[in-house]
Image (cartoon, rainbow, N blue to C red; front, side):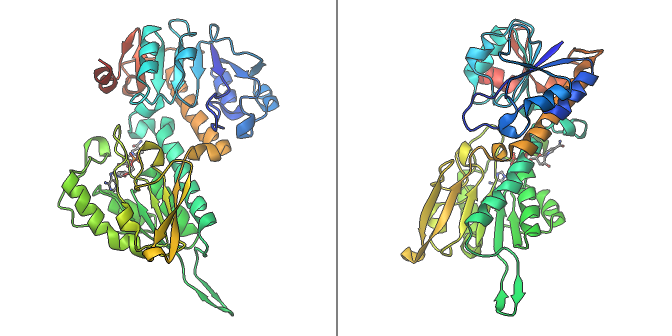
Length: 379
Ligand code: NAD
């Protein structure tokens, strides 16, 4: 069977679906790998390294001859329409927002696996691209904050005086938030963090952060360890209780998300009014609606604070894992290779739909949309 590795077509996407390391893993599994010329260059993987690992480099990836198409961003309908029935695709599918592509995948009888759907169970951790990419994003957003913050993160006691550490506030303590806490701690900041899920308090503390308890009077733990959306009055109460923490923070990182829903609004413009001049807000959820009012993905927005005495910088993050494409691809490619290894039988990919990881990750198969919420949403 031939595994295809295309050059990603979305502008600003530097990641690649396979690296030379995973090509070797796939070849050892008995698969053949074709890499589109230059597919890994933006991520830092030259063609020669793929060749050395056992792949062939092709000027054009012939989609009619590829058995398994691996990818990073969701495929376009143009690409899907070129795939013969029975082709297997593996990559991010964004089923909630890519309805026409999902319908095309079903219509073309493509067996597609969307990495967002990989069940979040221990056995599937090595295939969990949401986790691997959130780890990259959580780390990177702290560095982006540090670059924009006009002060040190760590405490310095010098002959010329003492510099206090930065106060970092992390809102949303899932995978990205926990990485942000760890990274800010490594840089020497004092870190406070908050999440609506009860279980996150211990996780925050294990990363060295101080957990903020809010008296919300709401049960926000949903299915599968995810948070539930708060009612509008609970959301308003949350904003009110968070305001003093927002005001005293030097750097705020927001990472809150609800699966399949727009990002919860944690910080309003009003809440930012008394922030310190020079402070920085990094909104990791800017591409899904924003945790912070006014954030625009890919844009730094100055926000007037303290009645115009100065401004804070609101940063809407965009394509974050792509900014660290080498390591983001390394982890992402490994997630795909591990999923393929689970389905590999003597050099052919044969999905066993009795396996809960395989069944859970499957988006379309034999003309059907297998993922129930997507099927219902598109009915
Ligand atoms: P996510 O990216 O979906 O969301 C980020 C965080 O935002 C979550 O912690 C969520 O509780 C929080 N949040 C949502 N609404 C909020 C609000 N109004 N205020 C404050 N915070 C809010 O989350 P994630 O990183 O994917 O993790 C979600 C869950 O999945 C966690 O329980 C995690 O332990 C679990 N998980 C399991 C596995 C596995 O077993 N393979 C892997 C990764 C994550």
